[in-house]
Image (cartoon, rainbow, N blue to C red; front, side, top):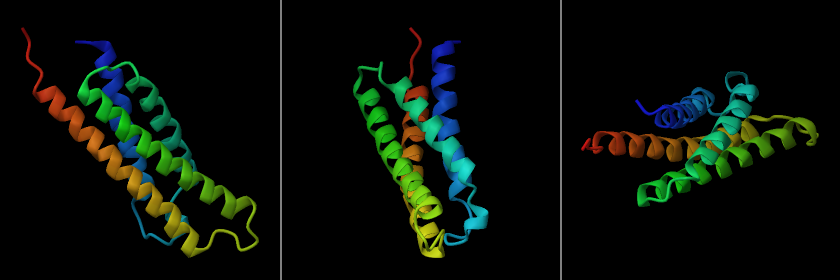
Length: 128
């Protein structure tokens, strides 16, 4: 068993599950979308991105691209959430919550593509 592959797979799957946990729920209800879960999703996605930098294969490039897309979407979601919570006089409205959740949904799609790539890569691996 390759420990590097285990760590890589762990962070790819953890990134997707944290993102899914934040995304799940009514799109405009801020009480069901935990801001700390979004923060954890951002951090784990950034770690997963760093782990993807060493792979020089074509599938590695696609892994990195999906991770960068997820990072961009999640960072944008965190910035919108931070602005609404700490800067805006209106606070965290249902419309703002919907924007944050929608951005995390885009990141979730990118994370799911990354998980599918990981599974395809694992299934197609031949010992020899």
